[in-house]
Image (cartoon, rainbow, N blue to C red):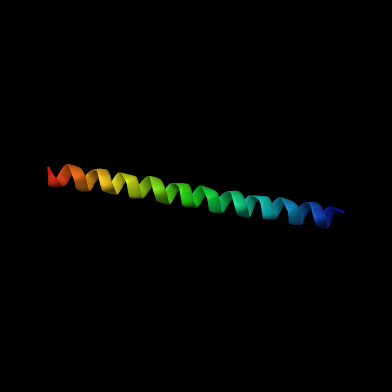
Length: 41
């Protein structure tokens, strides 16, 4: 039972970590686009 709980916990952390990294990548990309637009003005 303890092993199953550990596996489920690690699985949830892994999935939430992927979503967090993906969101961070999108934020960085948007920031870069704003800098490009500001530089071309």
